Amino acid sequence: MFLGGLLAVADGSWPLWATISIAVLAVLVIAGVLVRLLGATVRSLSLRNESERVKSEVALARAEARFRTVFEGAPLGIVVVDVDGTLRETNAAFDVMLGYERRELVGKTMKDLSDESDRERTLEAFGALVRGEVSSYEHEMRYKRKNGSTLWADVSVTYVPEDDEPFAIAVIDDVSDRIVIRDRLIHEATHDALTSLPNRGLFSAQLGDALRSRLPGLAVAFVDLDHFKVVNDSLGHLAGDALLRAVAQRLRSIMRPGEMVARLGGDEFGVIFLDEDIEARVEWLHATVAEPANIEGRRLYTTASVGVAVAHARYERAEDLLRDADIALYRSKADGRATYTIFNEVMHESAVRRLQISSDVRDAINEPDQFRVAFQPLVRLTDWKTVGYEALVRWQHPREGMIQPDLFIPAAEETGVIVRLGREVLIRSLERLAQEQRDDPTLTMHVNVSVQEIMHGDLPEHVFAAIKATGVRPETVTLEITENAIIDTSTGAGAVLERLRAGGVKICVDDFGIGYSSLRYLSLFPINSLKIDRSFVSGTGSGIASEPICRMLLDLARSLDLTVVAEGIETTEQAERLCGLGATTGQGYIFSRPIIPERGGPLILPPNLLAGRPMQISA
Ligand code: C2E
Ligand code: CA
Ligand code: CA
Image (cartoon, rainbow, N blue to C red):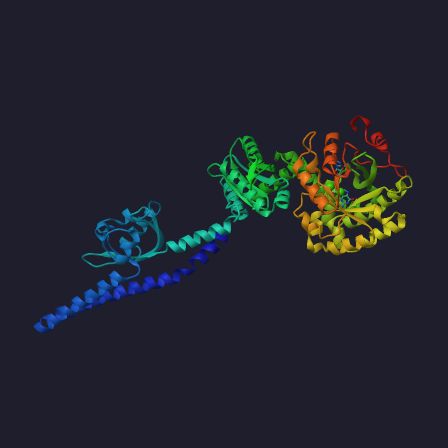
C-alpha cells in the first residue's frame, strides 16, 4: 500500500503526457482526415476543371507537407507499424530517442526494439490490437537503445483499420527521468539514508513474503551492537556513523541471494537468512561484526548481541518470528552481550512465565510482606572497606519462590505498581541504614528509583519524609536513576532532581554507558556519581570486558568531577584494574552478593569485608 501510494505520487505527471499524446494523436488523425477529404474533393473536382485540378493537387501536396511537418516535428516519438509489427515509418523524435539512423529503424520489428523483459507483454498487447479485440492500448515499457541502454516510455498504440492496408500508430513518450525520480523516491522510502540498507518497512514486507512462500532455511536475526553509544560519546557522531556504515557493509558482504540485511534503527540490524545451517551462518555473522574496524585512523573493536528465530510450520505471521528473535536477543544481552542465542521453546516458556509474573505483581503489592530488600555492599576499592549498600528488592512469590527483580520490575513499572513498591523499599532501606549507622555513621544507602516514580512528582516529599522518620542524614542517601530516565524530557527529571539535591540527597546515574545519552549532556543535571554498567566490567573471565571503554568513562567522569562506582566486579583482577584506572568504589560478587538480613538483625558481612581487603592481594 505504501509503495502503491508512492507510485501514485510519482505518476502524478501522467495526465500531462497523456494530454500531449492525445493532442498529437488528434492532430495526426485530423491531418489524416483532412488529407483524405482533400483527396476525395480533388478527385470529384478533377472532372470539372483542369486548372482547378492543378490547384487542388497543389493543395493536396501542401496538406501532405503540413502533415509531414507535424509528424516529423512532434516532440513525442511517432511510429507507423504494419500489422506484423514491422516499422514502416518513424519520426525524428523516435530516431533520437533510440539513437538510430532512420534507415536502420525502418524494417525492424517492435520485438527487436523492445527490452527483453517487456517483449512478451508488448507482443500480447499488439496481438490483441491486430485481432481487433481492442482498438488501442497504453502501457509503460522499456526499449533498448542502440547503445544498449534502456529507454523507459509510456506508449499508446492505436489501430487504423484501412481496408487494403491496415496499420497501427504508436506514440512514444520518453519518461526515463520520471522513472529515475520514482525509483529514487521508492528507494528513499524503503532504505536507510546512512547505510543504504533496506529499512524496517521493507524488511518486514520481505520477511512476510518469505514466510508465506515457506522458503526453506528461513530464519531471522536481530543484531544489536554492544556499547555503541560509547563510541558516539567518546569519538563523536561522525565516528559512530562510520562504524554503522562499516558494520552494514560487512553484514551485506555475507548475504546470499534472496537474503536481506536491514537497518532497523539506531544500532540494530535485522537479517533474513535462507540457510539450513543457521548456526554456522550466525557464528560467521558474529565473527564478522567483531573484526576490528578502522574508523578515523583508530582501530575500533565492536561486538554484537544476536537473537535468532528459525521459521517452522508453527509460525504464521512475521510478527511472531520477530517476537521470538527479540526474546532470543534479550537472552543474549542478559547473558552479558557479545553472544548469540537461537530461540527455543524453553525460552518461549520463560517468556510466558514472565507474562504470568507480570500479572501476579499487581496483586502482590497488596501483600507487602512478600517483598524483601537485599543489601549489597559498596566497597572502597583501595582497601575494600564497606562504605555503603545498594538496596535490591526481591519477591517471595507464593508459588514460584524467590524472584529476582529483573523478572518483575519491568512489569511493576508498566502497571505503575512500582510507585508503591519503591516507597516500601525506600522506607525499609533507610530504616536499615539507620540501624547500620549506629556502628559506622558514614555508611551510605543507594536506592534504585524508576522513571515512573520521578514522573509521579512527589518523590522528593516521600524521600524527605523517610529521611525524617528514620533520622539518617540526607547526604548518606543516594538515589540511583538510569541515564535514560534522566534525559527523557517528558519525565521532568531535572526539576525533581534539583529538589532532591537541594534537600541534600545525592544522585547516581545507574547502568551508565548503555543508554542513549551523552555524558556531556548529563553534566547539565545535578549528579554526584556514575555507576559503570556491569557489562563493561564483567562477563569475560578474569579481565575487564571493555578496558578502553572503562578508561574513557573514568576520564570523562573525572573531568566532570563525578565519583565512579564500578558494578559487577567478579574477580580480584578486575577490582585492581578498575582501582588503577581511578574508580573509587566497587560492587560485585567478589566482595559480596546481595544479603537478605534477618528481620531486625544486623547485616552479616562476609569475613573479607569485615577485615577489609584480603591480605594476599595487598601487594
Ligand atoms: P542494578 O541497579 O543494575 O543492580 C545491580 C544488579 O547487579 C543486581 O541485580 C545485583 O545483584 C547484580 N550484581 C551485583 N554484583 C554482581 C556481579 O558481580 N555479577 C553479576 N553478574 N551481577 C551482579 P538484581 O538484584 O537482580 O537487580 C536487577 C535490577 O533490578 C537492578 O539493576 C535494578 O535496575 C532493579 N531493581 C532492583 N531493586 C530495585 C528497586 O527497589 N527499585 C527499582 N526501581 N529497581 C530495582
Ligand atoms: Ca542500581
Ligand atoms: Ca546498575
